[in-house]
Length: 602
Image 1 (tube, one colour):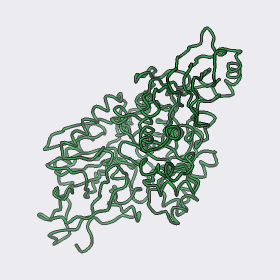
Image 2 (tube, helix red, strand yellow):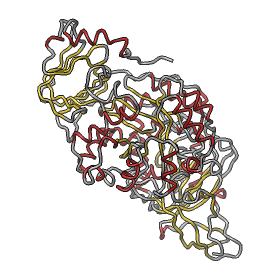
Image 3 (cartoon, rainbow, N blue to C red):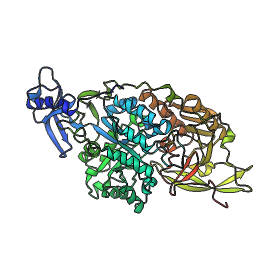
Image 4 (cartoon, one colour):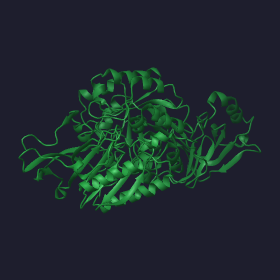
């Protein structure tokens, strides 16, 4: 594996000292800018920054003594010099891109550090998939750290994954150079009940001196929450309201507030800081899940910081939440997250702290983007051919695979329905009275109820589990299928017509994975994601264009939700309440048990 390396502090310390003292010349000097100091929350006007060996050497009022004949000098007058932005919790696979193409997409937006949890590919390919993501991440010109996935499957006994992550896998990964901790501990019932496997993974991480990621996706803040906090997770990003934010920080967790493509959880929680006055050092901003269209059209961490400011957060506090707070949480405060001597020279030049227009991005002392244009290569790993052959349904599907048989003798049924909640990850457990025709139950567009099916795609079993979903607003004959189906990543098909549902599923098997939208027997849009059925190694712009067509096609089919595809992709996420679907059946996540599709006696 090639790595895009930077000298360690011990390797560069003598030169950094010499440059700061004026005995040697710097490689690069930024002159006359406003130094945004996230340690002291100050704006220091007309300051200089000197860089050597990819690290900050001198930060002060005048770096003239650091300039030699070969020193590159950048005039930063009139611009703010802010630390490179850090995303504290994210899944690269949600961008539909490989690490290289994800990096290429976010670098122009000022993101220079990412803390990623590749548990999507872990569910499909196991430890080998994690290693591939880790290795390509290490090759990039920005900092992409990896958290070893903790839960594949995320809820044992409620879903079947392509591979299972075991404690010995976690222990092995802790020795890899880019691993900074354990990915989000989604099996929160396992932690609450002191499951030996979960505790072994947490122990392996803590024994390695690394950070344990949290995921407590329950509104219950009683004894179960306190038991989870006692289990060791150091952070959480699943809060949706102010009370969640307060509860977590009081228990010593760092609370992460996310703004992804469809998760809008900052505005409802940042009041814990802006109104309640809690210590902002314990709050962190992140994206969690952002698809390629959001990255290309709207931004990345600059978008999150901008949104936090719009929600009433002081710009300097918001910047701390996206820089030094993140670095400190992962034990990397001496390595990144601020403009200070010895740290990696990750710095962004912007003319406005509120709108965060990104003029120049410097990573490890090198200009990597300027005015939206990437200036460096983002190297690709040579992915093995088998990563493109992960969609195995075992057979071609037909319309009859999506028939739902009514209970014997029933004229109507009371069906349990997954209720989509716009801009949030949780769903609602709804019910609907549905008619029975010729012994079969179908959705009812008048009630905004259509069918959902989970198609097994790892072992070729040919299995199909059917149910109902509400909230998308689909009308007419249509179907949308996706092999991105967090977290087990089988195939999710939502539709109003059985024939369209079968054609959509078969299409994805043919192309090796992705997302497809069908209407009246015709394909309206296709996003090819051949790598593990999750990602494309095509440029982000190309993937974003196909994703935009997919979103537009969903609208043609009647969908009005914001970023509804993200909601679609989470319908099988059996660790977030209230109701989900898996390859084993319908899952009541409030009880963590399988449940019947129809209410008894109805």
